[in-house]
Length: 355
Ligand code: PHE
Image 1 (cartoon, rainbow, N blue to C red):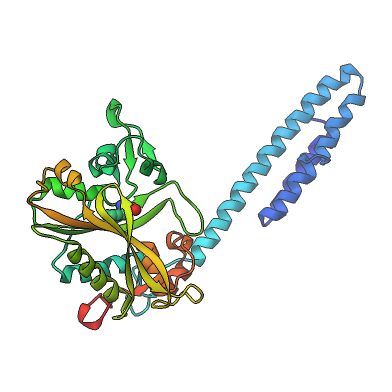
Image 2 (image 1 turned 30 degrees about the horizontal axis):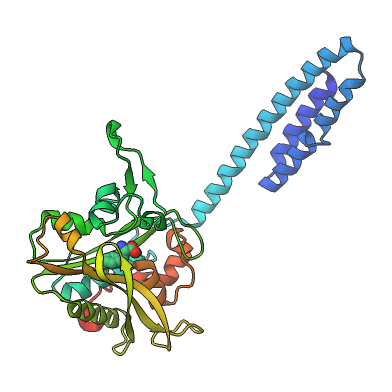
């Protein structure tokens, strides 16, 4: 390498060593390798050389370029890991400290809502069922009376996975908690009383939709269950959950393939202030009487047993109850957000205190 190239490599090394952040690093990179950077200028000058000198000079410039590029990348990695270390040590929490010295851990609002739901429905004699996040097509759709090519499959913007071990049947990230209705009916003899809190997935991402979110399903099957039971159960739940004994609740006829009749449930809410109870309506859940075909698909005789089901978004009711304006921070693990919206782990949900 000629002297001017050796000098440029050395000068770049020195400059990189003094760059303490990525902004300074980038200025150096552009100054050498950018469109009119010092090394780029040398490459451009090659054209003016006689052909016999050009080849040797070109090879030397390329060697210098390799050395400089390697130094620049190494410095970038070092600066990035230093920045990460600084961020991590700034947010460090010593989980081994005794509780009075450490800032106490807090319960995430999603977990808190699930606990409250378990307490309220538990007091009605309803227990908890769970199912896997990865389902097969039949449990997520088919058994629920959503045939192949039904538009509900598109409404739900489904994430698909290939079948396991060469199985041609694709699997689905469950788009709702309703497949656990199917699982429960297939494994438990009626009467059945369950809620199903859990994660659900749809290809949807903006300020009010996340590709992963949470729902709670409800399923009650017994002899002689009517729409009256459904309404009573949900009105009681909503008033207890939101802590407003006169909360207006409206049932509006709707359609789901797996319930007949189907109803959306709205609560009173003020569009302008976001306050609960006010004169506008806000839809918060879907519900209905379990479709006889769904009962039959799951081995339950619809002439003997009837039931109701509902499905509710957990984020939506949590945001409403606590006045949380944005959905995105729910999943960002930002300790400041958790300190603000989290709940004390030492204050368990207790119905007699109100939830
Ligand atoms: N699974 C429906 C949804 O995700 C909600 C629902 C559940 C409706 C049970 C009726 C009965 O939109």
